[in-house]
Length: 339
Image (tube, rainbow, N blue to C red):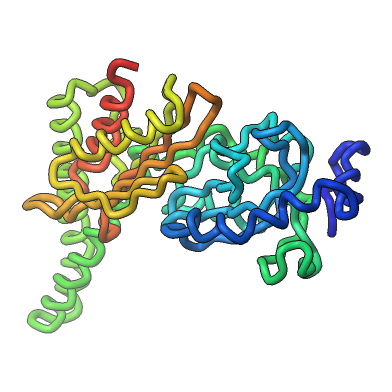
């Protein structure tokens, strides 16, 4: 087993734990717990994690699942009754490692992850060699990376600003339309006319779609009373994510998130994972292709919970007329009412 070189010198103690008393606890956990905790979890890896128990305060290894839910949220689930809530930084201060590819993956277009969720991955012990039967045989292998800590991730991954969103709408709508028009005129009128039609059609149609998105986004914000200076920077993109904290325990925040999703018109909850993730789909409408909405809740303390809300087009379109931004703001407003 390779342990993060940055760990304090007092921490090698866990390697000598197999013989004494701390071994029975991890060995008794795997049998009943994984099945209950992994019902709705996908794209996950199981690891041996060195944490301080919420039950008795002792440090030892726990069977833990690092989860990628869909393509937007990463979180950590400890498969042990010792952890009623997700571990915080105080319970995970003795080990820091980073998972290969997670930081770069989160910077990609469809993965909006906050530093708070990144920090949940810090306490992972990684292995360069296969784990033994005694250390949960058959589970995934990782290696420690010295190049960068997960804690170096920004406090909020930057979203697309108004200009980049407008360019994407322009390119993804204007260019295909321009090519179709050029192909038609090439067949009817020849190459010269086609070359003239291509840029003209692209500019007119693409620009029209940008103006359409801008108009409807502004209209929705005016209707909801959230229009402010620089609104286009946060609302023009069809890919929306926001994070907040609530002065509520984990269970109350989870129930409130369910209530927020039920208030979205045309929404249908498709995943309700008691570990902290709720996913819903909003049905298609006359001017909307439908949205995929997810809420991830994690415990910050006994009486405080963090919430990450995401709304994206179900079919990956760029022109959402401000619907995804409206979904996120509606959920945030409901979560904060009376808290």
